Image 1: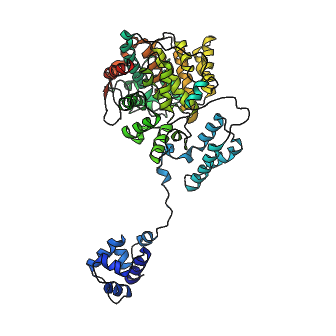
Image 2: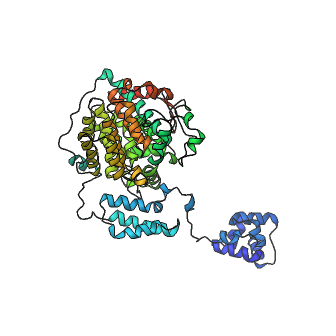
Image 3: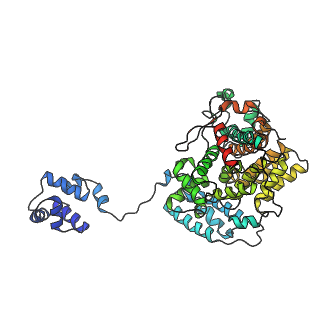
Length: 526
């Protein structure tokens, strides 16, 4: 195509007259007429003006030699994301097997679609797989409950309250003389429990147990040290052990999502007060952390906020992780600021959890928050756990499985037998089993019961059994820190962090745990 023909096509495709083009270029209509008829040609200055008008290169305009010509003239082509660059947490179609398992556990009547889910999951990433996944999401969203499903698991707060046990704990006032020690102990206990499990988050027990044995740390009784991880030891394991945060190569507690959320909850209360709403939580998430600070269900919810899906829809839309552990690790601050009031702690936890989770995903956060609030006024671990269960539906899977752990402890079964039972019920080698709320809540419960009220023994039990090691170490540490106060934590656990915690929260950065405890105390005694 020559210059005259190209110019005429560009003008007519854009729907403008010769007079309008002449006005844009700054010439007469006759000049444009001559250019299009081929009796004259624009000079270089006018060619440059024309190329800017139509947003194409000079090569494409004057010589018809730029391969971009067809692209620039074709406005109706289909656009698709580069699926290879999408993280799996942001690509629903890559998680169809997880969605299938999650939906079946929820009791959704979708068994007839199992083969479709599994076949679609095997497809390569791309538009076809996405389109099939979109249809399957609609199937899940609109599915009823299958006949014979025995669990009753609402996600709204009012129905949750109706389905709780009848015997509700009374609100009790904490001993104000000891409350700072307890709150500080909870902050420190959570941070150190997280640090214990952080370097081995994601390892499975087929490598974790041999690692601990080779380093003289099984049963686990202390931190894993960077200095003991020789090349010979590291080379024996597929799990990457080098370049992690160990207590002998840090001077403060490193950034971690488990501790970020505790500090972020403080920011939430500062901004919106104790009467915050789920909407408020979603705004804090958008304003104070980057997308990559969020994982699994939280990442999905964050992306849903951006797309305009607000709570509670943000927890449901294409979220196969909706009962995973993410909400349970966000519970602690709501327990800290409600000492002796597990019901209010659980309610605040519901407001937080409901933006990203449903059913047992929500219950996990309510369970943990209530235990922490009760630990401020109760010295009996068994009773603290029962108080946690008092805030969630009796007919839930979480209640059933936590009670199974309690029953084994009460029947005199060994800790080894109890943790083996958890491993038998939940497969740590699948992401769903490894990261589910219930599997990890069972581990927290077992570690608290078999830990004998000893901080170090309890967090070590929570970590050495695998699954989500840093999350479980942190939750157990938080509960015992609140129960026993800072005096109940041996100095070797907190010495490496120097009272300092780093965060990725915008405008916050590093914080002193003692300062956070003092600030928390003011809200707790409001």
